[in-house]
Amino acid sequence: MLYPEIDPRDSGWLTRPDGHEIYWEETGNPDGISVIFLHGGPGAGISPSHRRYFNPEKYRVILFDQRGAGKSRPFGSLENNTTQGLIGDIEALRAARNVEKWLVFGGSWGSTLALAYGQAYPERALGFVLRGIFLCRPSEIDWFMTGMGNFLPDAQQQFLAAVGETKNPGAQALLDLYGAYFAGKHGQDAANQAARAWSGYEARCCTLLPDEGLVDSFEGDEIALALARLEHHYFVNLGFFSENQLLANVDRIRHLPATIIQGRYDLVCPPINAFDLAAAWPEANMVIVDDAGHAASEPGTIRELVRATDLFAAKYPK
Image (cartoon, rainbow, N blue to C red; front, side):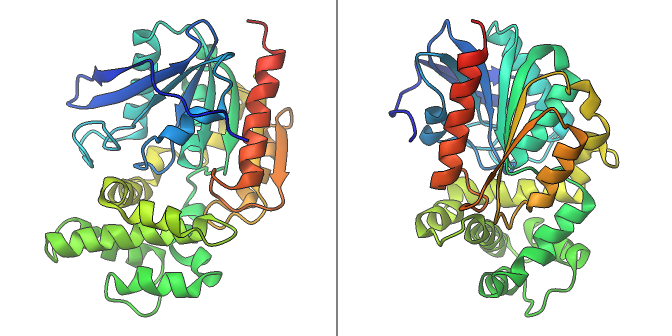
């Protein structure tokens, strides 16, 4: 259901004034509809499969590794790593690539960042394709730390054991424990082990059916050592948002077309998040995928993501 594999026709690093260098790449038709791909995590980075949700004849696809992720430098850095910094990176990349407006496409944390960017720069957005909605509210962070393990208690035991626990001590206590490990208070090896445990736990909760390939990928150092630390960093800072900011500011983008795609059995970002967003944005088209969890790689979700980009390309007058 994905479009064929495609190599970047251009790539590079965007140097930012606060010490970060942002890796970007571009594929597809240089005269097509511009779209920015926002990956999850934060910290997960982009992969070749992410280029394939878009018809390469219709779209000019721009992807980038967010601060601290993937090929962006410095890897895993928390310094100057905020949502406001990421929004600035997106806007700087838009200007550097000579894009007037673009479709904003993001899943999981990418949906969070898509909403935040769109609300900051609504005049630069053509519309939105959003998957696995995460609004970064305290209840959602609590759910990640304490709730989803009720469905996968065996996975949760590995998550807890990495920081010396057998029972979940609660969201804040668990964040504090992981924070101590990530800060190196138990040594660098223990910190890396904790990062792999965090990332592996998320991967095990991502799919409706077990996907050991996804788990192996998430537990690898090229993802785990950034993903875990950055997710923890953003969790303890509540995403650098004010209370309920993303829902409160939906009016800034309600005039733009949007598709919300949500797995029915998403344990990482439960469907209530998508329903809350749809209630605030009744003009948006919400699609529930009844045979999917959280991952973008599940067949039903792939189908709906490609359908959404195809429909937008068919309707958008280029």
